[in-house]
Structures are given as C-alpha cells and as structure tokens.
Image (cartoon, rainbow over the protein chains, first blue to last red):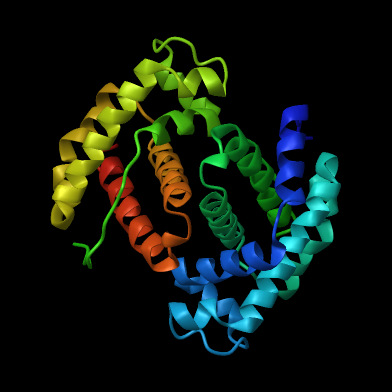
Length: 147
Length: 134
C-alpha cells in the first residue's frame, strides 16, 4: 500500500480543485501525440492527425483528453487503494484497447508538463514531487492487470 | 548521427536542486553537501546550487557540439561511471526536471514542437552520458 503524507494529500487535492479539465486534458493528450508520434497508432479513427496544428485542433482528440483526465478523478477519490480502483480500467487497456503500458508514463509526463506550463513557478518542487508520486502510482495501477 | 533543426534553450541550474526533491533517492550522491532535510533546505543549499551550475555548464557543451554529442561526452561518461558511480537512469530523471522547469518558465511558449525537439536533444545527451558504462 502507498503511504501518503497529509501534505501530499493536500497538494494533490489542490491541483484537482483548480484543474481546468477542458484545457489541460485536451492539451496533454494532443501534446503526447505530437511529442511521441507513435502514440497516434491508437487514434486511427480520430480524423486528421497529419501535423501538430491538426492534432492541437482536433475536437475528437480534445474530447478524449478530457475523458482521460476525468479518469484520474477515480484515483483521487481512492488514494488509499488506487490499485484496486483501477483494476477494471487496467484490464480494459490491456484486453480491449491493447495499449502498451509504457504510454501511460509518456502521457503522465505530458500532463506534468502542461500543468507546469500553466502554473509557472507555482509548480514548486514539493508540488511536483507529490504530483509525480501520484502519477507513478496511477501508471503502475493501470499496468497491473496486464499479462 | 542525429539531424537537428534550429533550437533555443534556457537551462536552469535550479533543476538539479529540484531533482533532489522530486526524486529523493538522488540525494545519495550528495551526502557531503550539508542540509538536505526538506525541500526548502535543498532549494536554498548553496553547494547543491553550485553543483547545478556545473551540470548546466556540462549541458552547454552538448549544445555547442550538437553534431557529435557522443564523442563530446565520452570523458564525462567515463567519469560518471568509473569515478562517480551514478546510476545512468538518473540522467533521465534530471532531464525530466529540466523539462518541467523549462515548461514552467516558458508557459504556453513551450509548444509541443519545441518540447519534441528539446526531448530529442535530452535523450541524445542521456544516451551519450550512458555510453561508456559497462
């Protein structure tokens, strides 16, 4: 089980309390598809992904990014048992979506970068540490049911 | 050899201090550096800050020799392996902290295209630093 300090819980809750899902979710996923182009393979039915502009303006990608970000809500609500909270999502990604689990780490990196860009110096080292610990646990839980 | 288009960087020594906070196990390389007891202590630690400057100067060598980072870093790689015994995975972690600091500074000017170029540069640096390990 993962141990969270009170400070970590507060820092993470604050990020989510102030999170603009529409903005951050859409940007993070689009960025992932641009910076790590092989991730586009999972979005063959999403229309025009021809270049960075097309990806940034693609409404299907934006909507999907927001959906993914809301998927993190489940982890925030169940911080003391993220592994079990994500069991079915993990199976979905493995059995149905066939997503290489390394991509979860790539997307979480892009998410951190988008949040850092928005928060500037407010994204302090302490906040970054708590946030990345949270994402590491999420990424691990998402990969757990793979075999 | 890697092909490059035009790029600009701003590399912040504070990224090294940040690395010690976000990935606390990296503090093991800095046991003689004084007070590392919490984030505040680390971020205001003069020895760590000075070391951050040393590391950034090392990165600037890569920027000046972008067409042959591998050879430019051969001696540095040997140093990190043979003398400093740094786990090469830590190079990637420091690269991540540098990226976060650059993103914080540049805000929305840190576009996906710039990020892609920047991360390409960092992965070449990380690879070159790890090359002489055995």
